[in-house]
Length: 365
Ligand SMILES: Cc1ncc(COP(=O)(O)O)c(C=O)c1O
Image 1 (cartoon, rainbow, N blue to C red):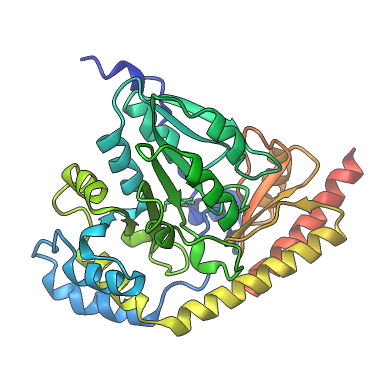
Image 2: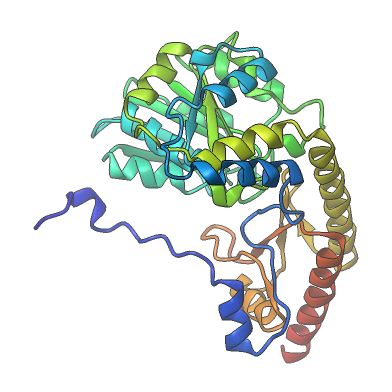
């Protein structure tokens, strides 16, 4: 048997170590995982109640068109229902966009050091990947534009960017969109947008009115705290959404996901609590890093990437031994770690552990 030649070199996704494994292996009673940008406050109680109500229906297929959730989001965003598509997380929408739009040899442009699923799915379709290095941890839209050719089919802009946490502003993205040919699809991945109150941050869904070649991705995995239920959505022009829908599996989102997402949307109190706590957490990390003499990229989502000025792996391992799991291992940022903003207590523990680790390493040197 011969798999597709363009997938044989692809790595199999390596999930982070489960908290219980780390506890057992290192003999720790408490482990804090701030590695996957999950919501430290869980999810809305309304979402949990909605899931409980769905339990009796688990033998029945979900609504493949997610009609109720579509209607709710269409009203919130001021778009028509035929402009929205759901995926098993926004991960699946990225997959479907690659599947629907990229054929072997098409060019697709993305930042170098961005969310890895853009490249992964484009590789599966045998597209030509063009990675444009970040500038100061931020998308370099000028250089990305320079790489557009008549073979370009899809451009990916992760805003805020994972892993660096930086944003491109409304003015910058509008400049970019005004120059990109209208036949090139621009995917704006706004997985963390609900955390942001900054008025210079663009809303991709609003940009659609002026730039119909934009598809905006959102997710219920982050501020809504529903990561395990795998539900995210895309908003775009009806014909673009139809093309993505043509490659969608019939029942790609679950009953639990749809019901919880609908309820979560209605709990503004929970969302604003999470947004506020996250803002405080980012301010706390920024001031703590400054005291430690460390520089971080400007962070807008629920995570922050900081230069620990030592090999990230060393700091990662030392933090792990203290029961703190963060994310390191970014090829272009070998001395940076990415930390998800946790609860106040978790953030204080991370800073205390990082302070101790940096001192221990300094003593050894
Ligand atoms: C930028 C970005 N896009 C998309 C996703 C995928 O999220 P999900 O598939 O859970 O919706 C993530 C998850 O970390 C992300 O950081």
